Length: 223
Ligand code: PRP
Image (cartoon, rainbow, N blue to C red; front, side, top):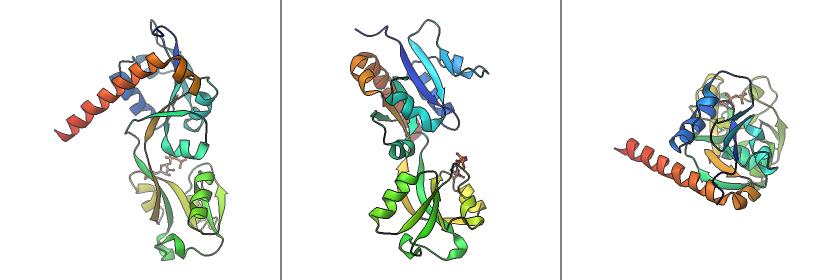
């Protein structure tokens, strides 16, 4: 049995963090230590096997791939972009949004096929974007940015963007409209490939609890 073997979970800082703590608590993991104001990046839950590692979201798969964390929570967009060797265990259903291609509304473009030859596309997801445009037979120059991608078309850096949209507010307020959906994304539970084998009992127990929490949540939403 592996029930007392320590387990480290990489928690994404930022917009997914609150939802991650909520689902983990529903799965029976005390997250109160994570809620206390602190700049510490490694936090153990006293008297339990659980340890949290607070990471920049895009680094979660790296910590998990190299075994610095056994488990992690990360957006499917980051997984698709990263190409890391991790086990994708569960769709946690929160953090739902779309990865889209958007253009300035004023461009009059309504389909990716209307983009000019060698259009410039700004994105924080160069791998996904290149793959998407190649798959659609569209020649595009992909420009990597690290955030505030919507700025690209406004300042003439790019003709289009590939980015995440959740409420659509950022697109709207920057005069952009979506013209294609690249992927639907949501948060995923991932595991280190070795940990998943060696700590299988504990990880499966957590997954069963999370599955149950998601079912209860869905039933609550439907009822
Ligand atoms: C994300 C994304 C969009 C925005 C979309 O940015 O890159 O800019 O949220 O959300 P909305 O559709 O609800 O307006 P984030 O706030 O994570 O910061 P970033 O631009 O620096 O990546």
